[in-house]
Length: 280
Ligand code: PXL
Image (cartoon, rainbow, N blue to C red; front, side, top):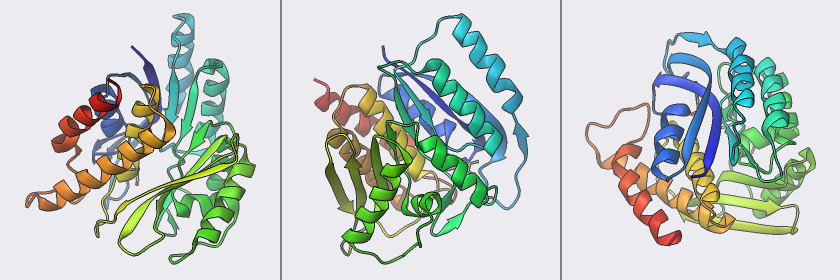
């Protein structure tokens, strides 16, 4: 069985980061090893939340794994708490990366033109350096702008997207993929650039007019699970985009939906069925 390490926080209530990566990647038939960077009572979009930083545990935990000879097929990082944590994550990459390890970074820190409460511009620059170490990065447009000193635009054209991808590629990642890219009315999706083949790729889906928290983590988790299971980039991103969109639609139909996250639990069986068709 393939094995993924995911490094991100545990938001105990909130349906994001580790609490979506673990069930989703596991359901996709991939062993999911977690390295929690912090424990929060909820994610940071709640009015108040508690945080216990676990930074001092990262080295002892990974040292133990090293002594056990553990190897990972992929390392997937999401929300990290601080610049110091990013430094430790770089060392973990150096310790555990082999020729066959996929380094997948979702530089979670911002959306809709704004940084999340815990972060500043210096943190964005540290994340940009970390992204240089990745095989694949999946920032949204806001995160890409903060990492590349680009003006954030709500309305843009394909030229703007390609310029942003060019700047992201200069950070050093092999494949750069922008999420939440909307190039025509009623559509949204991903737009990527592969520096090794010099090719662009895109997948657009119906845009659902609702903003939910944690959907980026769901998209990234499915992408990592799919790539680890051997799907192509196109297949993996299509599966992830379709699953995320279907999950948002399903959530909207639930009269008791929580405001803080989506009902990915309801749609996991469909994800498993779709993956089964692609891995036959
Ligand atoms: O979904 C991204 C995320 C993960 N973890 C924490 C967050 C957020 C987004 O706000 O606050 C703690």
